[in-house]
Image 1 (tube, rainbow, N blue to C red):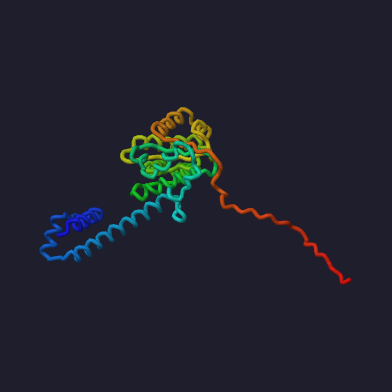
Image 2: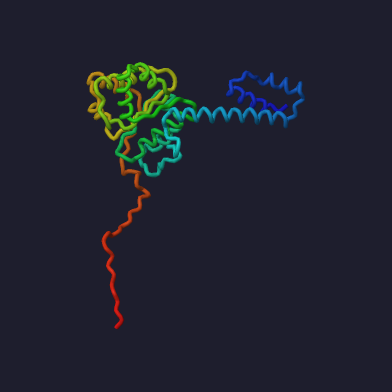
Amino acid sequence: MNESILERIQSSAKALKIDLYTAELANYADEKELTPEALEAVCGVFEYLEQKKYDSMVHTMLKLSKLPMNEPKTFERFDFSRLHGKHVQSLKNLSSLSALYAGKNLAFIGPQGVGKTHLAMAFGRECCLKGYKTYFLRASELNQKLTDARKHGREGAVINGLVKPSCLIIDEIGRCVFDKENTRMFFDVIDRRYNKDGPSTMIFTSNKTPNQWGEYFSEDDTLLCSLDRVFDDATVFMIKGDSYRGRKLETLGLEAGIAKHTEYKNA
């Protein structure tokens, strides 16, 4: 009896949430006199079903995350060669999701076009591939989401929805100002996520350093307390340099006006 095939079948059955043990399967194979080829065929069916379930799960996770489905941002597509310094390897190591498992928050700070959003999205995509719920939204979208929640009396539901994902990504902090009520709701989310069980992380991107964030929120005491919780156990990547955008830009010079024609007469 080929034990490795039975173990593969059991592994796939476990992923499919089917109670099937190696000894049970071995007894069944002996009773039915299944050949190694037949067992391999059975194994192939189980592995196909496992892969199909995984693909469906990832598709659902990515769709709900609001991350781009077309031309996805991945770590493989990020040009690390443009970054220099002793902490580049720390950026490369983000794909291990150690920050998620350790409950550590991340922030990418720097000017426009240096890859902050790409890195945040790439981390979120890796979370989806591992089966962790992820949600991406820009700060302006969050601000509007909180305003709409207050308008329709759905504050609790919206806050719960922002606490639930294992990975919550808020892009472009500093692009809008949160009023006092929205600030309090936002920091309620932070406080609840601070005590969240299981793998959890919040990711922020901004072209403003964290000590400037107070300008965009309207609650001094609450702000200081909540920001302390954001950065209590966090890694902040300060990225400097020129924008990645426009690397393939081609500029062509043209002249507008009426064309001048020279007439030549026969001598």
